[in-house]
Structures are given as structure tokens and as C-alpha cells.
Amino acid sequence: MRRIATGLVIPMPLLLLYALAPAEIVMTAVAVLFVAHCLLRRDWTWLRQGWVVAAALLWAQIVLASLLAGHGVMQAVAFMRYFVFVAALQHWVLPDPRTRRVLARAYGAVAIWLVAGCWQQYLCGRNFMGYGRWADGALLGPLWAPRAGHALVMTALPGLFPLAIDLARRDGARGRLMAGALLLGLVVTMVLIAQRMPLLHLLLAMGLCGLLVPRLRAVVGAAVALGAGAVALSPLLAPQAYHKLVLNFVAHMQGFADSPYGMLFIRAGVMIARHPWFGLGFDGFRHACPDPAYFHGLPGLGVREGVHGAAVGCNLHPHNFYLLMGTMGGVPAMVLFAAFAACVLARAWRGGAATAPCDPQRLMLAVACVVVLWPLQSTSSLLTQPTAGWLFMAIGWALARVPPASHLQPLRGRD
Image (cartoon, rainbow, N blue to C red):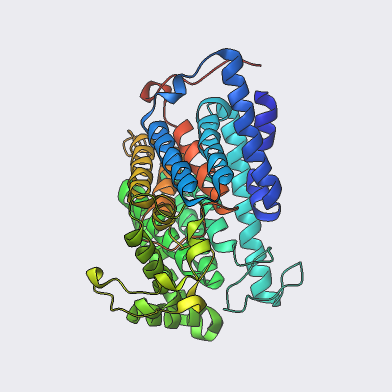
């Protein structure tokens, strides 16, 4: 069973690009196989972890909220599969160093494929599928929807950044020059992609690397400075990117409450304020967003009363993991998700900074967890692919990289 699970996990980065339904099936299948493994081995020691307790309480809160709301109960029950998938990666699939190396190569190959696809579309006007830029100016890369930015961040952090750290650490000035070229290529590619949050995620990750890896500080500084130069030249080289990264971003920040994201955040805040204890059940935001009962401001936060977009300002989700949990399970669900995130980060970062120079992949997986779990950001929905896949793959992989002495001994043996 472990061999089957490993064979399912390795192609996940490619599935998260092109086959979202199979990616969902893989996560569910691996979770089921892991539970069967635990039943056969009669070993449930992995349950005695802080993040597992927080995840179980969060799941119970969302199931209870869905029962009270009268909808989405089965979806809420099935939500636990994601957390079991994380445990399977941590204790069963990825403790094996050879499996982790193969997965890292798969992530690196997908990152290179994304970069190549973005440049091909930028230079030729259309990608290999025949698609041009998205309506808002974002590059699609080798995809059919604007998902290349987030996918590149999630694959480059564990797949390419460790290579940059190794180059800067081992090969002197020549290695630092090569590392700088690699990081600069990623930054310029992200500027051309013209997706704001992935660009900010990449810059956050590079900043953390510069703080924790002294040999990389000058390299990171030079790459960021040259990336800023690319943004300055974007009105000439990529006007669509300049409009979205600069003009559109400034407009959103100046009038955030009336921006599309601001309206979603306000609507979610009103829902949580109206239902603070149990929220609106699984995927409650999508069901309740068009309801005029929530067309209000948040005077307590300085947001004046107003319709703030009314039904026109709705979307399928509130574009933030923590607000999504709050609309599904109230304030307790928000607190429990924050506790889950804190437990994951504490485990992933345990001794990580001290071992950064000699274990760059472990560092970059911990950085990836910070990037995806940072609360002040706009995100896609945690309930759908590919977001759920990228998030829980990163978490499970990061937890598996923590030395066994730092957590419960991983499950061993073959089925």
C-alpha cells in the first residue's frame, strides 16, 4: 500500500496543473490507504500531535455548524480527508529520503516548465494551447486559466530555491552569480505573469531566505533590485503587467473597502459578526453572499454602512482562509484554524533556521508553510483544487522533513 501511495503522490505537482479531479482523487485515496495501514498495523500514535488535535477540533466545529445550518454535512465530514492526507505524507509516504528526492525533482521540473511556458506565451503572444493573456492581463503560462503564479511559487520554493542556496554556499562568487541569475529569472517571470499575491509571496520567501542564509543576502538584494527595475520598465515591455501590478494595486489600496477584495472581506466580516459561534456551515459564504441581510458595513472596524457591491460584489469564497473558516464555523473555527497553522509552523520551523545552510530544502518547505498560512492575504478557496493540493502537500512535506527525534517516530513497515 505504501508503494501505491508513493506512486500516487509523486505526480501530484503535474496533476495540480492539468488534472484537478484526479488530484482530488489522489488525496482521498492516499488518506484512505493510510487509515487502512494504521488499522492493519494497529498504530495510531500519529494522533498524539498538536496539529492533529487542532485539525480534529476544527473539523468537528465545521461538521456541527453544518448540521445546525442544515446543508453541506457530507462535505463537512469529508473535509477531514485533507488532514489525514497530511498525516500520511508526514508519517508514511515522505519519511523516505529517496521519495523526497524524487518529489523534489518533480517539483523542480514543473517549475521550469511553468517558467518556459510563461516566456513562450510572452514572446509569442499565445501559449502552446493557443491561449493568449487573461482578460485582466495576467499570463497563463502553459495553462488555460490564471494559475501560473501560485503554482510557480509552490513548485519553485522546494524545487529550485534549495539549488540557489547550495550554489551560493558552495561555489564562491561564481555560485552566488548563478544563484542570483536563478532568483532574478524567477522574479522577472513573476512580474511578467502579473499576479499580485504570487509576486508578494515570492518576495516574502526571498526575504526570509536572505535573513536566514547570510551568503544569500547580497544575491537576494540584487535580485529584488533588478526585479524592481523590471517593474519600472514594464510600461514599455509589458503594459498589461504594469497596469495590474502597479495601477490596479494602488487603486485597490486607496479604496480598499470598495474594491472587489474589500467587498468580499466586508461581506465575510458581516456574516461572522451575525453568526459568531457557528457560522453558516460548510461553504456557507457561497450560499449566503447574495442575501441582502449581509449587505452592511462594519462600523466597529471603521467601515461605514453601505451595500458594498450588493450581489454584484459576491464570489464563491471570501478569498482568505481564515475568513472562509469563520464563515463556515464562526469565530471558534477561525481560532482553531489559527491554532492548526501555529502548530504546523512551530513543528516545521523546529531547528530549521539553525540547519538552513546544510539542509536548504527543509528551510524552503518551512518558508512555503509561512507563505501559504500567512493570514493577511488574498487566496483561492481552501475547499477546491489546486489550492488545497498545493497547501496540504507543502504542509505534509514540511512536517516529514523534521527529524524523527523532533516528533513521534514515523510509522514503518510495509503492507
